[in-house]
Length: 114
Length: 112
Image (cartoon, rainbow over all chains, first blue to last red):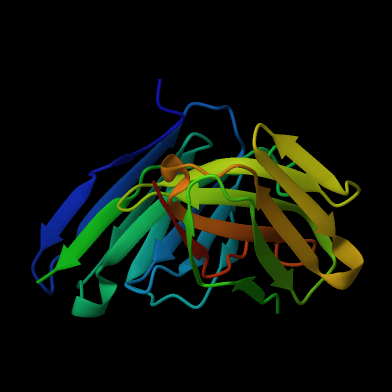
């Protein structure tokens, strides 16, 4: 059983389109995150949710909107996609904000905007 | 704002060598620090988690140490193998901000 699963694994789309990436965790964690890994492989936090409540919202364009329907799911919707949005997006989860047992990451979604 | 630096950025060694990867961070007020490895085109695999009250953690050939007061952590890999080739990432969890902040990683290549 995959602990943190993301779909799709690959996403190729045209500029201006709207797309969503889904994330589900079966670890019973109450906190979930979205990270972006750019072309230089640098990982940067985008959002975090604790018990479905938005906790961290870094400087991310308004075109990115996370949605957490329940503690096990955190989806990322992106409007009006731009070339610069091309990156690998990672979902992660932890138990509690202090994460005594560490973060668990999904395998990533490679988004390519053409 | 937490900044994480990993040195060296890249490292190439022959099989069997012992090696040390360094991580430094600017804000010592952390809950814990986690080391990950990332294989090309893959996700992140957690290697070790050190709580702020701990000095080191060991898992097999890996040993991670933490000196919170000086803002440093090291990952020691004993008897390196070609399968250890990957990018190693260090990530402290701040008490303020409450999300892992990553360094840019050390890319390790172990040749047989």
